[in-house]
Image (cartoon, rainbow, N blue to C red; front, side, top):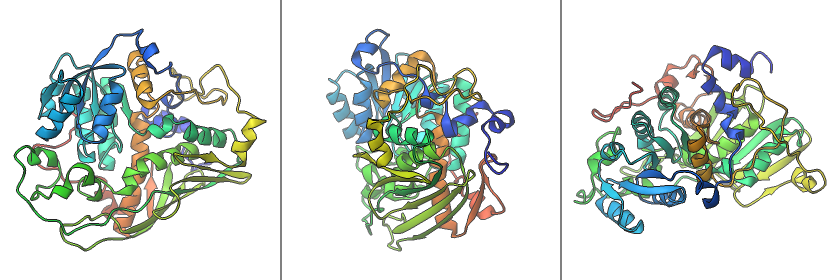
Length: 439
């Protein structure tokens, strides 16, 4: 790459090897054994503790049950945790405080399905407790949280998979592979549609239900009166707890886009309109962002249009979403299939030395890949570094919207250039007793 680009070897020499994973980790292309019940039956079944049991948290716990035994579950809502225990045959122990679950010696693996503002602290605490972790996306609430996570995961040597499962889906992997193989020529532009943020409010303040620990649910965020719409599924439409569609869908689509781009953004501009309704959802009503990458690719992110990712090169283009992967390069696969090599694209023992470009190794499913890597002690397809870098890109968009200026980003030092107002937004003040510490 040119001097302004982020050279892979330069990252290796100037920082930790883990930093490389943000664009293309060894785990991203690592061999995954067949992730089904037949393959996992040959290895020891692990004890699983699941934290956050509503909605997606329950879904990932049931998926994990294919590969281990749910021995403990935790949720700050008594009704949720009791219903969850019943769904697992009433055998797991139940907890309100996740730290009590982490103390159990029969728990080897943790799944985390809590709201976004709890992800980082719980992953850090689980790693420090000697557990491997499957955590729902988005990985972090702020950019600086991801930097702390990187330190802890590297130090503890734990396996951490983030639930950005589109990396394990054949449609998205085919699209990335076609781009990497040059089937659309040189990648020039990526267009991503995420969908609209929700509008709502004002909402009524109500007494906290006796079965719900609102104090603990808030965690690091500012202490506020209880509004039901702040919690459970609708937490994602409040900036205190999440980042709206930029981090919700963005943690999926921007991850795939950046995987194909194979570089980091260096300039971001964005526009947005914000609601003014008191005690209502406060994420942007309308937004769009444009990123310029170190390798010259431009990525446009909007909230209006057909949900998905359009990858445009100088010789063709590919569209991909959860229902389809399309375009002439896809049609040409019938006569000109991608090569299947018997080796991985990257050598796990030396991340700085790419081998010949081979076909991405097949992954049966995201949870299966995680448990394969737990047993093999290898990086999973959605490892900490790649997902920190992907959600950082999401955060960059929200920060650019908030500041309202074109921002220059130094991806090596992970800081804005010449804009202290933006740099202050890389982190947030944390409520006493819920601080996130790397040490």
